[in-house]
Length: 319
Image (tube, rainbow, N blue to C red; front, top):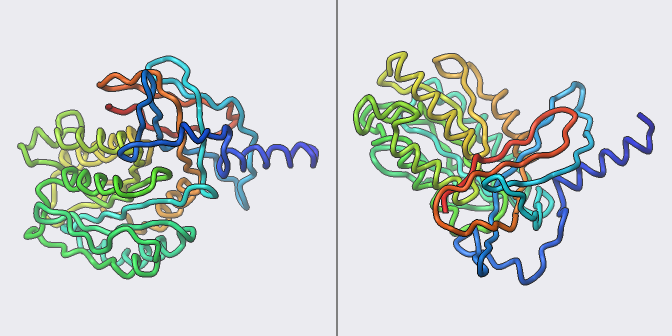
């Protein structure tokens, strides 16, 4: 590859991640409820989209990306703008289930370091899923040091077990409504097991609150990155499988990624956090003009010409 071609490749991908492809006119910038603004028979919709490239030591070489297109219900839609890290600071909620095994306590420093490494201007909320309620230790703040210090070790007791992790995660996602539209994400550390309506409700396809949380994440354009860790009450192997499957479904359908290390707690979360950090750096908010303003579920597909890697995006959203 010649030097001039290499420069072109780098510039094109930097344009994708950090800048707009199409400037949104002043008349099109009105957005309601943090997600969409209806204008007659059309509406604007914002979704999280990530460019995932294979890592090649010692460093990743940026590749050419072209042909970005978005389809809703099978029909092409007009892309209005893409906002990457340079134009849209990250808004992130860090959520930890409070009855996780005590070994998770040793990872709190790594989570704190992860928050401190976020780009300046990032907004962070810290919360714990416990006892039927969401305990917010720190509301959204741009003070990353303050957010990092809000972390504490989990209680690691069955006495603080949440009603189910997804109902409380949904409560946290609703809090994004007060935040600017743009790059939004959740980092969830949980066992993903929901037995609030019986053991059968722990299935990824049967959990009502899991589905409601997916709907909420898609509606508000929030990508959920999840890390599995077991709880002190020791769920059986079938429940562990259901929990991991539920986390995987939540992350995949919201445009995020789920991370597991067997059926136990990760030996170290650093590799997971490193990959999440990379994905967040390539996360951008894509706003398109939807021609399907009717209520109901709308399937979304994003494509691009990528020689390597993939485009990560939510499966759709419910209006």
